[in-house]
Image (cartoon, helix red, strand yellow):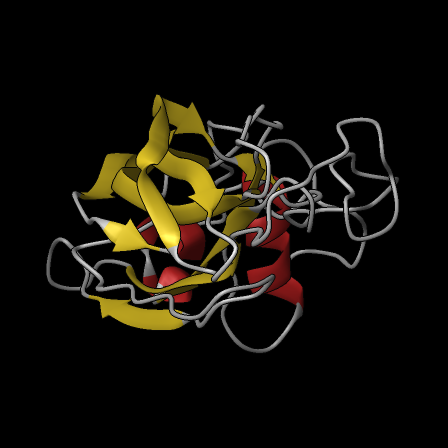
Length: 228
């Protein structure tokens, strides 16, 4: 066990992730349902993971203020703010790693050779306009896509040194946390219609680490897709 000082160097990171969780996000507005999936270790005696996809925000109606740091139209993050905003929307991903303390490298007291977990995903956001009766006009719809967008780190919770330190010093299991806060999109609607984000699709999710000591050079991925 290490000392109770802050973690040194890079942590031993283990990620065993996403082997296919099914995400269902329902309902309009700011926050959507969460889904938790247990992912087995890649090999017997390895590290398994609990993966949670949650906190999705799909702004309906869609009226972001790219400069706003507060309020319902907020798109900008403030200090120690690691959440998708109500104005621009996004989602969160957390991973809890299991069986870390039984790994040979951990038992030998080795340090990690990588500094961070990294996560990526393809995203597709569908936008368009609502008619006065509240129905979606599919003729106005368009999709904004990103390929292998990097998920942002939630504070220091993606640092391998911190995750190792947490396993050494605290009870329970620990792992990296990520989020995405999307940039604003311009949606122009005809008079009498209201802009909205019709949906969010997240696919080809991957989480990786390049650690020679404890967790290996590994990538855990799932094609999805997951919908918000």
